[in-house]
Length: 361
Image (cartoon, rainbow, N blue to C red; front, side, top):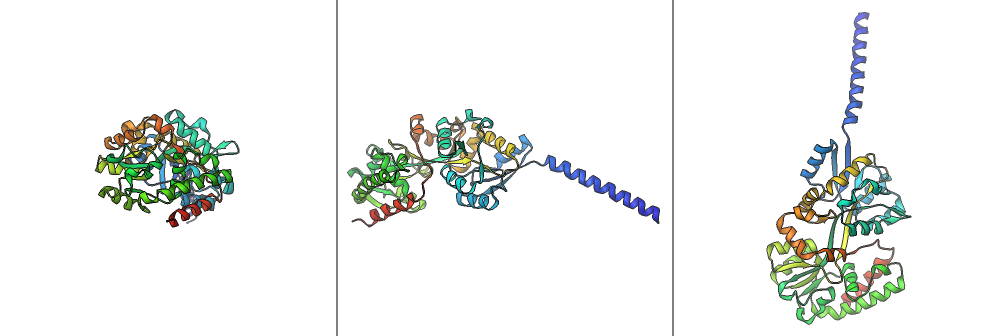
């Protein structure tokens, strides 16, 4: 009986050691990248190809700016290895909560990226001489116009032209204030930290928007509403986002998205490394992998938005690539006005201006 017990104990011990050893080996092999991102930015076929080529498992969590901030703030920058916040939602959050670590650009293949977007992202994510974002996916606000009025509407303030009276729509939101400011020859972004100068710019924009009210069919509040107005022809010119214009262009070639002469207003969703990332190496591998032109094109096809990858438009589905090229040549790309971080209190002042425009007769 005792002999049997000794054998049993020996067998159990050997089995336990095997399990532990196997567990360690399995853990070493099962490398994982935990990615928190937007819908369409990590398509299934891209994830599968990355996993096959690298042996790294990818766990994708779909999110948005507010949710990313909330999750990373709650854990002090833990729980994920790579995040994709917008470029204007990094510095303020980092200053307050310290949830990201600086980007090591020596590990990023910047040769694959649009130089203007790298610069814009570095500028908008800089804190204490360090940069916290790499450009990934971008989009813009500009003009959606019907060909019948395209000669008259080439910039934001052209929405006030008598040629399109009663056939115009835009939102009473901050992009409209910013766009009209640039079209008036001003530079709202450079005045962000000079309240008196920014107030002066807003005063001029407010006067212009009030004068323009007679031209406005309606102030659109939702994307579906605007698309319906443009489809029916009730509205011939609008300030809106590029993806909406390209969608309409696919339905009706007479409608297209135009980059305004004073510059489209651009946002960039970035790659950012959470402060307590457990697999930083995998994060950089993912960045460099998905910014290859042919891979980046798959992200565009899935999301409808273009990426910072140079040359990726050559691999995007034909109708979307054609619409993009019709909207953006190199000059228009380089003229995009990228949103910087918004200083505290600015949105309150802008809201007051928009309320006065809404109430004006």
